[in-house]
Image 1 (cartoon, rainbow, N blue to C red):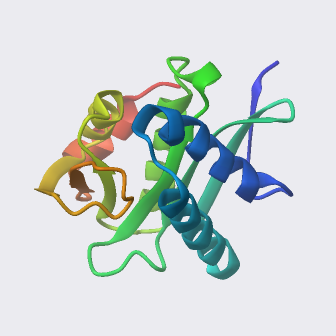
Image 2 (image 1 turned 180 degrees about the vertical axis):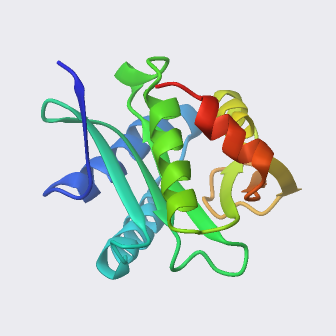
Length: 174
């Protein structure tokens, strides 16, 4: 069964939230504070998103949510578009799905003229960091701020719309 890409479909919000808790709960000890933050912010994004500028991308294997990524262009703020809710299910890790989702999101940002793209994450997610760097993101700050209340060291990565970053996207294969 192949992966099918889609936007919102009924149950997608709950599915994305579920993927986050399936990973970040057991692996990092994130609980209620993290889950309610993801639920509130993702719900607000979906309610206000501009389908001509923003992206909510889901990947499905049959009826199972395999991964997601979002690009908040209209609400990203002064640092540019905000890459958010990027996660691949445990059964899909290592399959190339994360790379495909990232490539589609960056292409979207470039296509709509989003300019710079930023994301927040935390230290210790080494595979994700390697993927971000492959797509032209660089670490711009690190702090003890822990918005997710999981005892982690927060990081901010940024990708400027440079030739180097575009080249990484153009030469990546799914």
